[in-house]
Length: 195
Image (tube, rainbow, N blue to C red):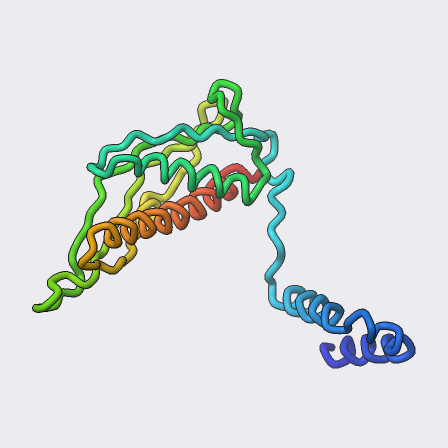
């Protein structure tokens, strides 16, 4: 079947080959390859527009910070908002009383461990674990289940003799962790709200 489709496409393009050459033929083949690859293997593109039924708006409350890292709650809230804007489907609103879905919770204490140590430089690499306790609730009071294991993630970052470099590496690791968890949260919202 695959050979038949390719043969038909090649035969269809032969008379037009010269007219397509100046504009570039590669984009056409890229579209054909992607269409064939996704059609036969069960994969498909996810459409978030109109996928949430009657739920149209989302309010994300900045989580409370129960860790000793100041400002990490804003990093998490920004990651959740960025992911919601990137995926679409739900409109972000500031007022939680006007939202169809409210996402709220807390940042649990952050764990940091030394993972690779040298006798000369001491710590070479740290491992940081970000854990969240989030709850998504609809306007009707229904709680959308969020898997607690998916709200916990670990990342490694490099240490440096320069304290400022180590601090920036730690902040970047926290941003990566928050972004990863935000992606999982939105996947679970999609699964829980899809009618």
